[in-house]
Image 1 (tube, rainbow, N blue to C red):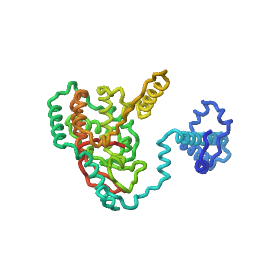
Image 2: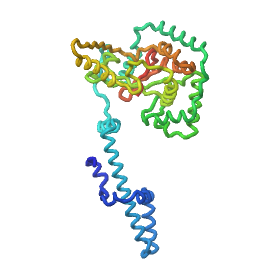
Image 3: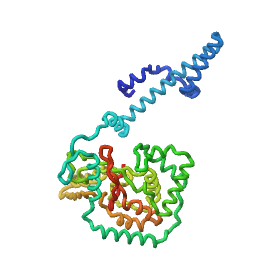
Image 4: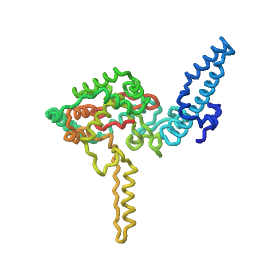
Length: 381
């Protein structure tokens, strides 16, 4: 039996059912169907009989049912505790929830050294500086050339006709995308979290599907979907009190609209078959990760070392793309998707969704002013 913590023992304060109870037949356990509600009803029934006729012959049989239900409830409680303890040993999310609960929520203290050399402790000033630094990541690029390329891409997409009739998003498709999402409580810019969507009624899901279809057909994106609340987390080994460069000092986490993320999942499932991932790609690919990339490189090295002389040599070239997510060209993304995606409405929608995203950086529960990103894509939570 898994070891239980002292807290579990204090909270439970119950004896574990004896082994003789475990030998009951499956039919007997299923016939009991012990629930807190049924157990309460049996107790009330016994009290009623005791008040009316204390010598009733049915009391003995009723006491037996109550005792059986009590042991069944205890068994279910122990089973639930064992499942929780086992989950904490294997589920990283459950362990992380425990760690976050142990760490108190405290605000940052002290002053922060800004990129211009000045020092301040005002959260609003720090948030505004971080937002301006994030927007200015790609300022060295030719913005005029980017705008021209974007306009050319949009005009070309408008002229092209959809090669096949786009199927509308159904109620079941929207519901499945919502159910597959994680029950996150993090609120997006529109004040809606994914946990809210998991509890919406049947009619509301139909309205959500109609909203998705109208957005794609009109190739227009609601303003709340083009906003992102950005949180910046210090990288390991970096002094959090000194901000030199946003891309090299901080991790960027963006909280987007939950409705927009659901539509993203639906579109991804539709175009996944049309887009071929490179054979050597490991990131953002199903059943691939940094572990598979390292394994492939290790196999090449080990294979060369185990060969008879003259052995093969392995040469590895590593390139670190600085601020890749923050400087990528939206026009170039659409240019790559233009030939792959048959539904041009979806391609135009993706361009309008990603182009000129509005961001607000949060620092110590204080948000900066809204600024517009000219390039780059958000890194979702």
